[in-house]
Image 1: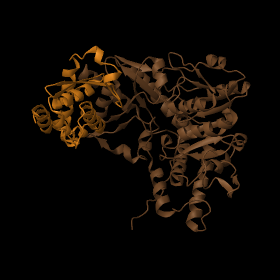
Image 2 (image 1 turned 180 degrees about the vertical axis):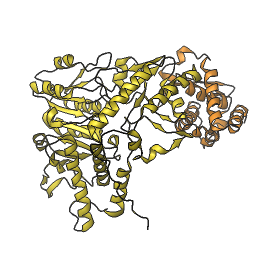
Image 3 (image 1 turned 120 degrees about the horizontal axis):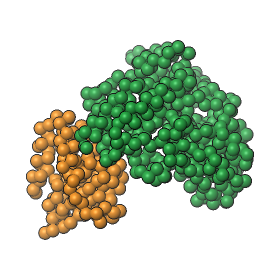
Image 4 (image 1 turned 180 degrees about the horizontal axis):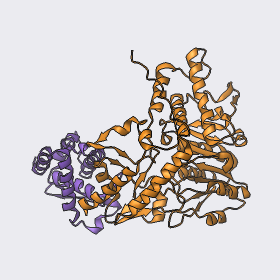
Length: 421
Length: 140
């Protein structure tokens, strides 16, 4: 029998200095090579790597505590249920949400937004009502509202972004009217890195009585988030970008909102009682979780939340802030590199184009040097059109990246220019 | 069937290690970058969908043989397109139908990046479709 790996000790909370070398040792994949070169992983905006503690939690769940959750009349089901439900509390803690009942497990942010669109918005919006989004939204925060528009006749309004990628609060405010029923904005742009002032956006939205949904896919990973301080109605994030497994996401919903929402998918687990005449739905959050949930993945997410909280979101944010500043310095130094998104308040997500070179060529040459970046439109085609480009190279940093990796990126771009120039 | 151009590419690539194969691909890319492609062909009608860069392929028939020319806004992709269109131009419909993914695999570009290999396979299907050559079905 294979020995079950012990759950590794968490990094000490409140460690005095943030040492990326120590942090990197927690991530097994970071020690591998690609094409005989050290892996320099700068594609974290798409998905982040996993620390050993997350891998151990998944292994432990399958190897020692596996049985379907809820209502199992046996030990293992009880253990799995306790571990799974415990993650609601961890997620609530991460978001400073009032309690675990405000935490709905979903598949990812896309599913969270579709849930709000198909349940809350479907029930509460009617023809002529307005939804405000921004030019920098990911397709996941555009297309669900277009589908709703086609079903209900609601109106989609788009707040513009400035040339440097900044969010324009005044022009956003000018779009708000008594018809505005929902404001759905990203917390951090996945292309520009722009941090949207979500507390101020929420305060303005509330002056017209609008509901506020925040796409926190990129927001949750770079800074502390407090949904009560923001005052939003919904906040969505995904596990795999927060060093957790794929297949599990979180939707925070204010209790009164969740209680006033009908189910959007039917099945097991989301009911109190079923007869052919009448079905009584479960209370939130179970009302929105039909069928067997991804409980192993959720348990892995719990380990990921423990991991980032042990390091401290402030410490992670400070480390990434320093990386971003360094990236600005070295990338601006490379002739022909044009940064896309230079807002003063910006997370460590660097998009750029290189004069005379296609993003795909730059990405392919970086790849051969072991540097993993993403190229393309990043599921934000309207933003690309707004910025007058078709694609960018995107280097998105995580808690384990180093200044040396940014230097390697700059050297890699120069190499690409030499090879294809 | 005359696959001499394809054989030249395949044999050259086989003789190289991964690093040199990538340099060879870059050389082709650079060489092909300057080659003209008719401006009017760079429209939606000739666009190959599903690529990360834009790829246009035009198709002509002369003496019952198919001829292809291609272009991309990305240099490396332009090199890959050229390898495909050079390799498989001049074939009849029946011959083209006999070209399989194994021909693409033999070029071993998957060792460079799997995305390139997937792109090449899509390109093969695309030119077969343009020529009306259905793999596994021998045209009369």
